[in-house]
Amino acid sequence: MQVTSITHGIIIDHVPAGRALKVLDFLGIDPRKTRLALIMNAESQSFGSKDIIKIEGDVVVDLNILALVAPSATVNIVRDSVIVSKEKPTLPLHVTNVIKCSNPRCVTSTERGIKQQFHLVRGHEDARGMQYRCDYCDEGAKL
Image (cartoon, rainbow, N blue to C red; front, side, top):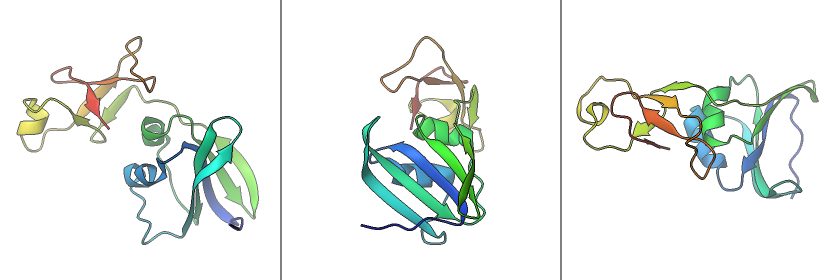
């Protein structure tokens, strides 16, 4: 398989295997309207396997949202076929309207127009190494 390099855009690398489509969804990138290459289950010395997303053109990636879905990912900015910078996402302390409360009785689940707001809880990490709790009912988040 051959995937050519891009001349102007971004490369999202080190995405956990099988999560590339979820990354595109969370970032609001529509594959039907965006010129991109999706490489899934590529070999990785660090992770065993990984996904890679190459997006041609001017694309703005919210690193905070990327950190929620793929905390190990890196974003390479490409200009004139050269990587000019690398960025690493960091977990945001607060998240609004990105994730949903897992409590069906929470006011954010039952009432319209209320923002889904969460805060990062340090020291109470789950299996993925992070945990967000609802600002209203203190229930865990659902990704």
